[in-house]
Each structure stands twice: as structure tokens, then as C-alpha cells.
Length: 485
Image 1: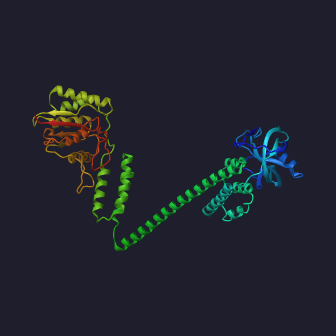
Image 2: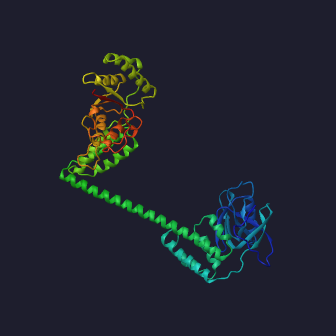
Image 3: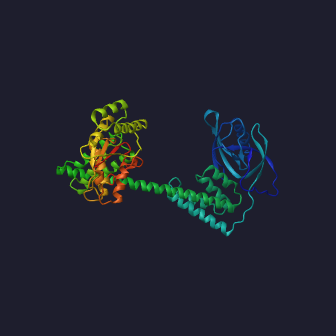
């Protein structure tokens, strides 16, 4: 099978098609005037080499695709090179190491025989070329680009551009020598071999050379950046070691490094921490390790880390209670109306069926002081095996009391919700919000919204405290409000 050339193959007057042996090349593309070494092991190819070495008979060496069945002939490209055997010696496993010399381009037309080796009709492809001013300009650009590449890439000899420049009198030979000398892909080399027209050949050659130049420049830039980064890290390490020795001689105890090590260990031993919390904590710990304990920022950063790492991230109590136990605890700990107990039992049963989730409206207990609102909430917590905590929101009129203040503020602090969760050490306690009828007496809508963000079971999965700065899941918390009648 012959793969047609991507470019038109010219027909030369006076040339008749003759039958030539065809040697498929799997590892490279041979150019006119180039020397190419291959290892030959297949019997039909060995037969071709043995036939052609006697009398230095010419054959066509053509690039062949390697993805073929070894039991069949490989597909060869239409444009190849007339070649001869310059040297041959024994290789491993009965193979031969053969040195080929390319002579001139050849066009394959039709396969004639496949045994004892591949043969096909072929004609030479070297039509006369006119060296125009435009072609000379492209030749100069090729030489210039080669000079840039050899300066940047140590793989190529600095003398390569000078050696190639010796072929300036023969534009075709110059282009072929460049194509053979550079590490282009085999597909690119075959394309250059098929480009019979010199203008086209130099256009494609410049394209591949510029690609090579861009790749080399990119790799050098990456290498430069890596070296600079390594030098910077080495410089920092050197300065840290100097600082360490100075402080050691001053008798300092390296408090910040010990504290940073303690906090890193705490992060490592806390499997419940979400990934975003771990990432934020490690950033802050790195900052802490570089701060002086005497600086104000050290205290601010350490306080934030203490809050961040001591919140009950993902710490919940298993929902393993039974409704019989809940009914027994409510009956023994609270002596209120039976109808109220039944309503609470219904809500708890729904919560258990949903696996600890409850998106129904927040329970609100209304009654005069001393009527047992807190006792009922405590009984619910006991029945469910949850922690119980009380929050009084009477007189609150600022969003920061609910959601905390930003860390950039002087004296920043978390809101009430985060503070009680840290105190109880669980993310699913029963929280009684008392005196809600005295909440936000100034009727500031933003304060109402802040509280709603915390207690609304449909929206509190990502409650954001301004101080903590990372969403906290409050959906497991059982909020109960109380109002004085």
C-alpha cells in the first residue's frame, strides 16, 4: 500500500517509470545527502539489502507507518529517497546494522512485487528551481532562526548554523540538511520531504523551526523560574537558620514554633475537620510560625486558630433513641399538658425518620415566667441524648451579636451561636433561645435576618459567622424559642 503525498507530485519530462526495490523505514525519514543508520531484521528486508549491496544498486527508502501487522507489508509514503548501502555489519539476533546514504527524492507509483522483497515503480523528483529574492530572504531567515535555537538549546552544536550555511548555494540541499539535523517529529520530516516546491518547503521549514524555538524558549523560562524559586527558598532557609542561631544564643524559647507544631498536630489528629478548614488553618499556622510572640498580630492569629480548631466541626450524637424512651423521659421530667407532649413527640418522630434532619418551623414555647419552658426544652434534650444550652437574646440589636465581627476589627469576636457551640463541644445540641420577644427592639431588619439565617432549618447548612469566615452547618442543631406571655 502506498500513502499518497499531501502535496502535488510533479511529473518530469523524459523520466520513465522503472522498478526499484523499496525499503520501508520505521524509525526515521531519510533525506537526500543524509546518512542514516538502521537495524534490519525482517527476512524480506535483509534480502533487499543483500541484493542491493552488490554493485551498489539503488533502491527507494520510504518512511512507513509502524502501526501495522508484521505479517503484511507496511504502508509506505509515496515520496521517498533513492538510496544506496554505504556500510553493513552484524547486529544482535541475526539482524544487520545498515548505513544508508540518501541520493535524491523519488516518487513511488505502483507496487509490483512483495516477494522476495517489496518492489514498485518509481521516478526521480528533483525539478529545476528558480531562486527568487523571496526564497533568498527565507533562506536567510532559516539560518538566523537556527542560530537562535543553537544559542538557547545545548542539544545542538553552536557550529551547526555555520556548517549548514556552507550549503547556501544549493537551496534544496540546505533545506534538506536542516530538516535532517533537527529533532522534528517524523510526520513533520515526511511533510518536508514531500514539499518539492522550494518556496513551500521553506515556509514549512520556518514553521517547524519557529515551533522548536518557542518550545526551547518556554522550557528555558520554566527552568529559569524554577531556579529562581529554588534560590529564593534556599535564601529563606539560610536566613531562618541564621535567625534560629541568633535567637538560640539569646536564650529565646521559640514559643511560636512550638505553638505552630502543636497546632499542626491538632489539625492532623482532627479527622472531622472539613477540607476548607484544614486549608485555612494551615495558612494561618504558617503565618503564626513567622510572627514574634511579642507582636499584636501573633495574639490575633493565635486566638483565631484556637476558635477555628476548637469548634465542633462534624461532631454529632448518634440518633439512636427510641420513641418509647422519649415518651418516658418527657413524662417523667415535664408535668405539662398532654397535648403539648404529643405535638413534641410528633416532631421528634419525624426527625428520627429523616435521620436527624428537621426542616419544619422552629418550635416556639409561649408562657409566663416559671411555667416550665426551660424545663421542657431540657427534657427534650435529655430524651434525645443531646447537649442543652440556653441563649438569651433579650436586648440584642446588633448583627455582630449573632454573626460576630470581621477579623479585621480591633477586638473581633465570634457571635453567640459559635460561642455556645464551642462551649458544648457538639454541632447538634438543643439550643433554647430565650426572651425572643425582647429581641431587636429597634426593629432592624438586618438583625432579624441574621437570626433567621441561624435558626431556619431550610437555610442554615452554610451559616457564615463573620469572625470564623468559613460556613458552619447548623442543620443538626435543634433550636427552640421561648416567649413570655
